[in-house]
Image (cartoon, rainbow, N blue to C red; front, top):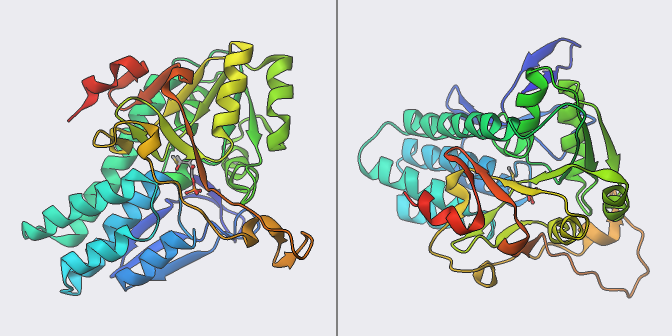
Length: 333
Ligand code: MRU
């Protein structure tokens, strides 16, 4: 992804990579104010970085898990223990489990840890490029799009899932506008998606989450979001607030697309009811910059994700093409 560096120059950067024996990643909690790179040489610290959301977004969580397993392999650690520890970082994003198992088999097979993890990360980016091509064709000149949370390069190593079609259409010279909802409580839409769209020069505006229905009523042509886990029937978990958007999209007849690699599809989970939803700390809701702004004595509830039923999805944009919910079993590997 394009990023303005500290010295004012523009460079290319990935969300996570391996260099000189260390896993390096953008500290996504510091954006958009600071582009800070952190590095780790212990798999437990990478797992902690997934947990505290230094790195985040399902495919990027997967790549980070692959690099954590790489560190475990290089350090001669017990791979079963490492895999269990890494998988415990967050419960919902299926890529975390998929990538950890993928690396586990490669390491058990005696493969080079760095080459295998790099291959996993490169594969993720290649899938996003293909998602960009399939989804990019849906974006026409003059369209008004809406997205939620951050399903961009930061969430996927590079390129993105929901933002990949936008990058593709922008590179092809098409002009369109993006509503990026702020995404309470951690503000990934405002702080990360808007940062990426800015770096790319894509016309956009940040809107409060609660303004989505209003803008849909004024005219939105298409909604594209990412996913953390997609069940076999097409129900999918994504950042809290996605479900509201899908319901409103149905009300206004707006096509609602989910962009995700096949590694986000969990065919062992039959329906959305079986997806575990992460509950995060109350303070993410009650505090701003470490200062409590809610009344003392009020509780807060903070589910990180919600589940949108398949019937509200127009199509899944994947690296294998665009599938209706009724067609997704064709994707099984
Ligand atoms: O809690 P986060 O920031 O990891 O949640 C991210 C999302 O919900 C994204 O929309 C999803 O992971 C898709 S990322 C390409």
